[in-house]
Image 1 (cartoon, helix red, strand yellow):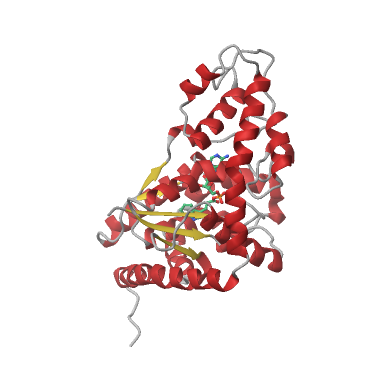
Image 2 (spheres, protein in one colour; image 1 turned 90 degrees about the vertical axis):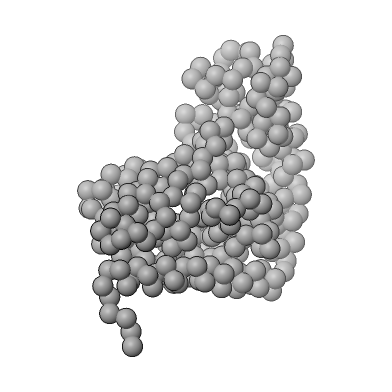
Length: 332
Ligand code: TYM
């Protein structure tokens, strides 16, 4: 079985629809066909300030939510990044292989550091993509299911894997990004030119899966569209409507052309109301399952302990081989 690996940050109380459609939904599918490793990346989370109690709680909620949307610890390896010390260890090696200019070209760093200012920007935020490289290479992943915004980090991973392999001999699998086009980028409901993101200017554009369902339905109903009335898929002329169609298609399993036909002759309001209703029905059982896992902390701990053990069984030999290749003296 080919191997997949991916991660998600525990930085808010809930995943948003962009996280789910762009990445996590693929994780659920891939656990059936691939040897799958998924993690909650708490080491990445601390690249920006975190309140300790909130971080701990958000990590639990993230794990419960991943189980709630359908990850099955019998079918995949689900763990917390800091439980596997090899991530930080391999990241150091990768740091020493990365050019300063190369790291400076990471667009997500440029965006995030611009928001934080020079003094608010940590060195950790700068080397964030290199920790991600280590995450992926430790498991010899073939594919990395992520949204479009992570493509550059996967490219960096490929570059560093190839660089290491050519310098020290074949050690790492060179991975590929796995990004289905239809949901590669989900947009903000209030500003369809921006990706849906927890740092968006208005909370009205963001659908978080664990939020109050009535509130989310309202957000769909007040989504920004355009002044035309025809429901059609056209990302340039009708980004707002196209985003709603993509979302509706992804959660309902009905194709975009089928939906366009279904809404022929109807107004935008019909699309928004129907999507709001469909979403409400769809998300309710996800919320219920997530709560069930959150109510059983002992079970959550068991899942994570087993996950960390399975992850380390793969990560540890990779790190040992890396250390060997670069010429570290083996401890006696
Ligand atoms: P994070 O936590 O920001 O996001 C998790 C996943 O959600 C995707 N995503 C989106 N997809 C489509 N539309 C959107 N609006 C949208 N917003 C977010 C992201 O692309 C991502 O796949 N650096 C990663 C976490 C990470 C990782 C890794 C991923 C750490 N190590 C190793 C893969 C492999 C991140 O911050 O994702």
